[in-house]
Length: 226
Image (cartoon, rainbow, N blue to C red; front, side, top):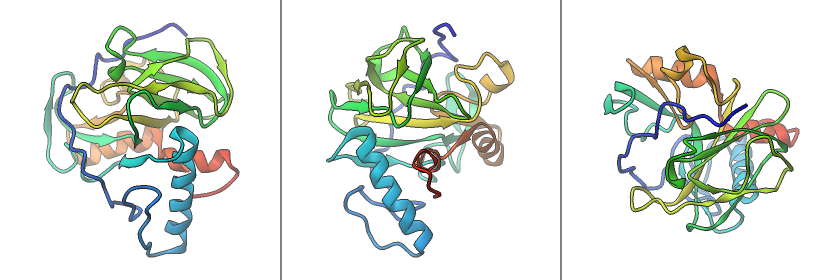
């Protein structure tokens, strides 16, 4: 599949970077608080393992899947590409210093580079695992090319300097449909890091239709459930 710039760069807005204690009751990974159920506790362990697999020790979780504190979650925002919309974050953001290596959580083939002509902070690599998941690794100085076959644990790139727009991090997403996509109906509601809708419910439905929580997808690579 050729390189494709899908829907242009994401909106140049400043992201709120306060740490979320959120859906799983997590603060910074590696300093986990108490969790109310065994299932959530199991997921917190998986989250730690995923962070270690992606960026190694010393990282922090900035944003979770469908994060309720993400801008555009409860009130619509004006996006230069998608208009007046509600937004859902479709990945997990792991923060570490610029230049930190980012490793693939699953083996696969690179099927696309998103926003290839934009600065690295707007770029993302898509890696298809050969089954049902297209992994997204975003905001990177990329070290892979389209068509390349990579192994689990191989370096995909390094965290790009965000230029003061947000805290440096890698966005990891897991899609259930081929990416990059040329389907116009999908492009109207989906970028490589977000889902959009005229209502919050519509944005949520788009996120759930086309993506899966990367933590759940990562657990599957381990033969586990979360």
